[in-house]
Image 1: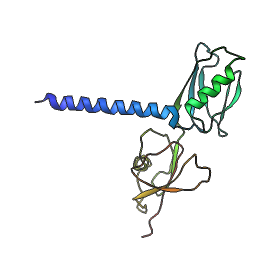
Image 2: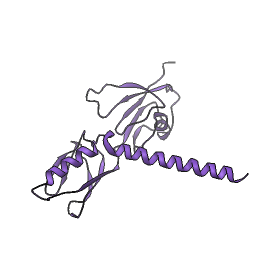
Image 3: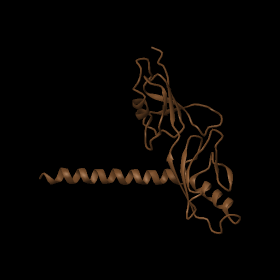
Image 4: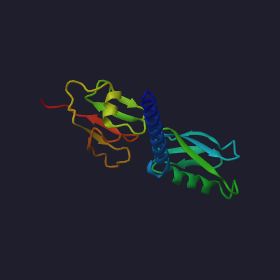
Length: 181
């Protein structure tokens, strides 16, 4: 009788861990677009001088030995990998093997009617309600049913209304509006 809750707990934890790994793999592949503030671990196999951690600057670029400045903003991990491979061959390496991992995502920002408006580290799978909790919760003036969001990738800068159970994206600017009455 007592083994069932333990078994259930084990299976639940295993399931959550598997889902988190799948979400991270998905995020690391073609879905996530790189941008300013992201920190990358780039491995060029058997090339210690090229392997290292690189931060994408405000212009969306970073610099690597031999190939110089690399425009990364808006690229996926796969696209950036292909770009670096093509810049390294054939002038520097015959058959470069490159692996890239995002080790630190750019932060999200939350403003408006929260107790501690600020920039906070992005965490995969976080909802807008989680973001409000991280920012200390709502103020007494907050409208709690939705949030206004400006996506980092949105060049027009227009806000969209989102449900509080939707997922936050790295670089989001979240605004919690004030209620009228």
